[in-house]
Length: 120
Length: 112
Image (tube, rainbow over all chains, first blue to last red; front, side):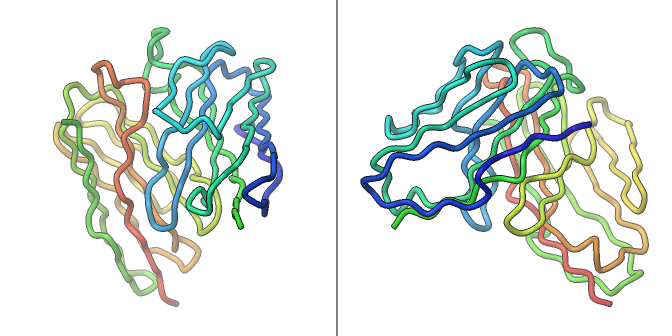
């Protein structure tokens, strides 16, 4: 089973709202990621969690706040977003991240189906 | 600077017309190259991991190969359901190796 589950599938929020995106995997993976993807562009890395600790923040604005409550769950809290933040938000996981001695096989990332976010 | 380039940007094929997609890369030290398929509005679906020159992997009508400078995704006798965007990503062996460097993708359309 290589399933990463994201909820909700679609989200429309106002610029003053607070919402959260959720991601769950039960593959025992210890690295989890948030990506942002705009139309007809490749995914862009936002955050990396390794063993439930934030290891990479790709200079993401503070209106995006990640959280990793346990090894299976990853959240992305959203607050005061802008219309240009509308995009497909992807969660991914891999058995390990590279810094902990992963190989190409153990760092292969599996993606969820994404949350289509629209900020109005 | 690490770079991944995919060509062509878009490809239209007739059903049964075989072809190849290219992914060329310039990185400081290849650790792994990954192929994904992405349908509109969905997340990327993992296809293959390659990590050494000369390696080949197959899955149904798809075959991925790797050289020291590029990878090819060969599609044999494609069907309309193979229509999707195919993404190549590379993991480099330097400080940035914790992330995937994606190419811009090839949008494939297979006509019946």
